[in-house]
Image (cartoon, rainbow, N blue to C red; front, side, top):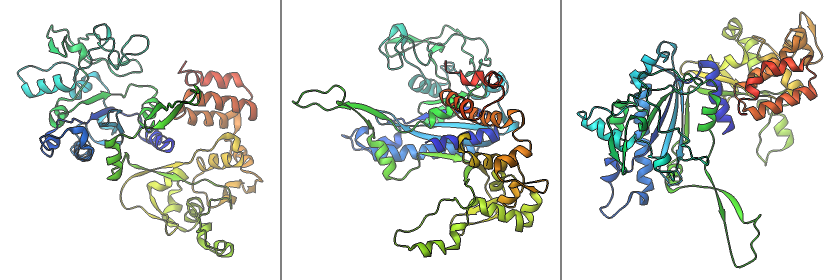
Length: 466
């Protein structure tokens, strides 16, 4: 899950912030489900059918987003499948549009997102909104609703305030147009108006006939929380077992993974739990002669050592390509840029020219306390077209003894630049509590010349959860 989250942040660093956050939930009343059930059957008894139909609907939604460009041309996207405690699946999409289709103004928001009751003359859309897109009721009129927090407020902040025109939110979702027209509908034993409507896209709602929430998220400052939300992993429950023996209040609680029947069916069918486009290459990082080696248990040590393939890794072959391949030599690429132009074959242990599909490279992260590995990564992120480890160690014709010395002579460590770079990269993906721990580590082990200046530079990120 952490790797998936890091890959998602790599997309953000390359393409920019996400523009749309789409949530699609399974509708157990879809005709594709109902028509394949027995008259005496119930939806919860057919997790296989629910999973297959939702998977088909999900693929159709992807076609609308990626090929028919209903929101515009997509630069990158990812989605994750989750399963509610009651069992039904739902999907979270994060979509990054290309620059010419970015949603930059409130007028562009209104083209895709609506948060009002439609005209009652549009009967099909009107009925879909009433069935799928009305929140609650909650708050004072229904304090026991599942969305109510411990302090007695709706965690989704419903009912919303009335707004005459759509406007940008302050580091949050936009304030969508919700006019006080006086129109109400009677649902779930209460009269409800525009303040209870969940934002939706009229076309997608009519097309898929399910809860389909569409939010513009381009104004959200700290996007890593959104990615953390959709990469949080599987559900867990707390349960207890009791017998006639004496109860041990400490040992009686157990934390366990919760697998609902539709999730079990989904995994048995080998349907993907998440997907990301473009793909992210994980680029290996290791000091010379310290790469991981895999081998069969029955192989002898001599056979392993004499195998020439064990010396070949992504990094060593990257160096080799910069020496022998004319295309690589002319382009003088950074390590992280290499996968955009070359494909790695894990079987043949070699790079070849890329002919199709876009990918993004991500050099695996390395903590500042890891010493030479950290400085090797720092060099690879800044030096173009290196031909070997020795080439990275050589500055102005002089070979340095360590990667740290080489980084220092290249000016990568002056004025605390290395610590600032370390913090800047960490800010893009780490949560505040991890950032504070990293900051403390830098104070203890790296001796910054001006700790107060470093703190003030990143104070907002270090304290954004307080």
